[in-house]
Length: 633
View 1: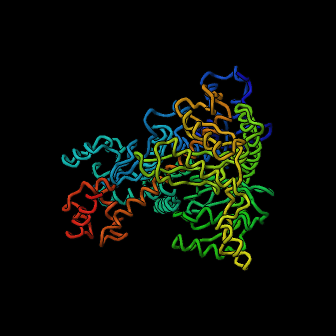
View 2: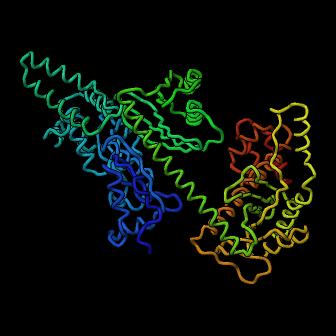
View 3: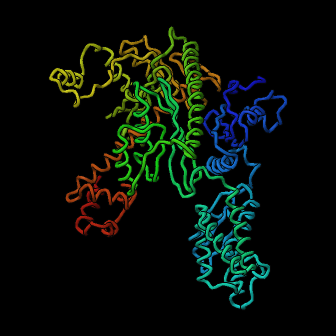
């Protein structure tokens, strides 16, 4: 085992800021989430010589294949972000830092007559309002103990509450001052409900109006020489300030905003989207953009906002960007339509917003550096995979263009095939093709038919496709916006890959021979043992399990399978609709209602006319016609 991890960041690449980091495996799964006051100092411990690491730590870092981090303004923010990511990703190496069930929450049972605050892991309490999650149970109890001093709401169990209300004797927590509900015999249900509303409002946004109000009451009581009341207000004020001190604000406590930090160069850009609600960072989203053309920073911001809010439901009151787009006013109108209220797009110039923008921009700069580094390494990996395939398959050149074919059917019906294309190790989705196969005897015959149809295009490279001729005619007439040139289908691949073993490979080789294109290499990948089969060979080629070449072939096979299944389902759905459309009086709207009600045509076929009649919009005559028509199919 090598003593240095291959994904170790370069010297100086890791920032010294506080933040949260994630280790991922080769499939992208998050293995471990941690926080640090100094990311560089903390992460350097993981990249020490492997022999010096604890066994569990060594197993985690050797299982991982990458590490990433997010910089945050304060240590409190890193704590909050760590909780959020642990809850979201449930990393396997974080199990020892939490209970074996789920994270605890603080819940207020608003559905009860006298709501209470509890610690729970149950997220399905009817009418409850949840806050958290918290990493430890003691952290929830500590927060509740501080909060009930300022907002004395009920904490006792339902059984204690009922017993107290029936006997007129306060519950035990009420007797020792730990419960302020009606069971303590000090407040009415209505007064208690008002305190619960204040508790929820405070926890939802840390509303500082409570601080101002308690301060006013304390000063008024002191001026009136009611020192006992002033002392109570003082204690409540101390409790509120203690809770507020445990959570750092990045903006004003009543501010909801989205902030975009952007780092760019001539070829690419990285975006860090900070979601701020109630003045606190609630989430971080990241994206990387490849620039196809040279665009200004203002245009880049414009495209980022369109992508971020094109289908979004949660549009905040304010959007903070590094550069104002040229059409900012139009964007504000567009966003207002989605939000239903005014939206402001602003540039962070000073104060808290400028500080947070610097933090987001720093994250974007780090992300851009990592992206460019990984892009280079990805290119090296792809090149190595193609070179390894060339050697393993005995090809004269590396297969820069690979086409993979897969057959899909449902019990021998609706037989379709897919063709996916990878060039230079990357998918070319604009050149994917699907085929319908009308008549066939088996999968090998289907494969032969499809490859003959595809290879026929290679024999007429100079012959223009009717669609291409229409494009040329339109261009000659000056019509540009209404036509779209289709990528040529006559470009030859260096390698044909089929999903299957020896029989499918032999069928593909026969199609190549009959088409006169034996210069194209062919192989198949069998699912069971991931064996690579070549025509005329009795034994398969076994590629190393960890090799980039095998991973590339697996990606091709899986993509072809996905594309074939998608096309087959669309065709089957179209057949179902066609069958039902033949029934007189049954239109598209009623067909949709029928399929939604029964779930499938099979269920509809087995339904009696009386059952069909129960569907909205289906009368007795139409129900009998549907049943009669499907019975003859």
